[in-house]
Image 1 (cartoon, helix red, strand yellow):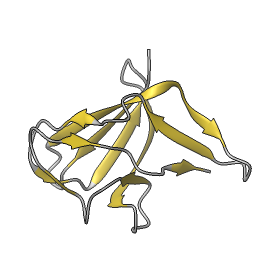
Image 2: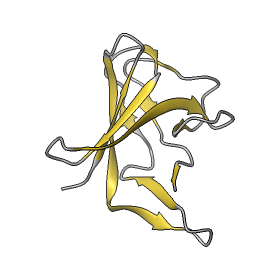
Image 3: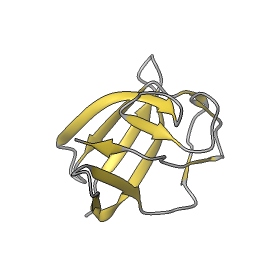
Image 4: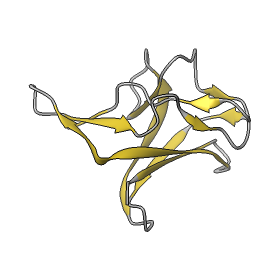
Length: 102
């Protein structure tokens, strides 16, 4: 099963779950792991809100990593593509931006 990134708002309400490819990404020339989303068109947003925290886990819920969420201009661990800030709207699609793990 593929690993998942759950995006939560500041009150820890789940906004969206992003499903990653399997394997979860590729190694870049610089030695980073670049995470890739399974659906390039994005995953369905369940609830509206400001994404604040991302929790990366295995398909069976074991924690891999946790970090801040920002748009692509920000310095967060998990980045959202095509957004200005991290506001998400229920019914829309969330797309993982360039997210590198070192």
